[in-house]
Length: 411
Image 1: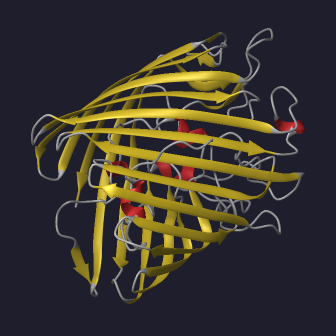
Image 2 (image 1 turned 90 degrees about the vertical axis):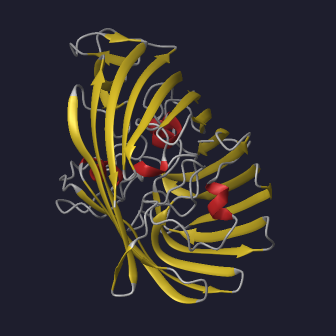
């Protein structure tokens, strides 16, 4: 799902050993770092305990689902066309994120991060659902077809780590290096997640990851894992993870990462054909001033042997997308974030619709007290085909509009 271009303050986490962030193993771009709280953490048994609560309301003009037959008579309901906020006119407890961590700069440590709420079922990895051994990941191209039982909780990260000098190794389950946005709600500047976050990249991996801080400005990362969103591997092949982060100055950072390996073309299932899946992700961040930050995220991905699951019968499916952010901190209480993006799912492998999809989002954040942020958001989505099912579930449109309200409390 990507070609390479640029990278984010994901590189901020890249430029140090993997002992940062309770919710992302690359930290997200500032001000979208993936640290759960600014307040001093609570200490439990000598470990840091942090958390947050995310409640939000989404008002969608459509049903929130894809029309998988945009060129045919009638409509066919596909998967959700949003990541977490896919319910029409719904107030949800999206996330309660809890993290217990001990990550010393030298020696043995570890981290456990649990996500509760409606978002947990979306990000659940394969082989964690209690009803049939499959996760509930809703992203098309990764979706579990076994009708998994939703539980409302997910062990998003659980790993041990060993740090010595410039090197850090972690083993277990951890979040992806890819992307400018993260699972942790406090690590993003918008309420709704981007197209790229939901449809271009994985959420988590299970395996081993090593980072090496070659200098104050350069960090190298390499690893091997079970694949995309797999706790239990769906085949015998492994996926290689490579990353590099470069921060030549405090104003500029660049992170590039790639994933290469064989995956089931049908997604989170353990049967069916396999093919090589490649992903290149790049995030660039430019801190123009202390208040103004620009971020650019580019993704390019391919999936081989995908004929049976592409919308147009393409054997070598390709997708790519570009997202840009402008974040401005007006004062201590008010901020504004503008996001625009373009996603080309030309073969319909990731969304089940062969389409070119654009969106623009404006989010205003207000912090009345230190640990509480209130967000208001408007968003417009447009496709080159009637990809969005209308609220009547009978017709489809090439556009969708939404408003969002969110409250995040950090502790």
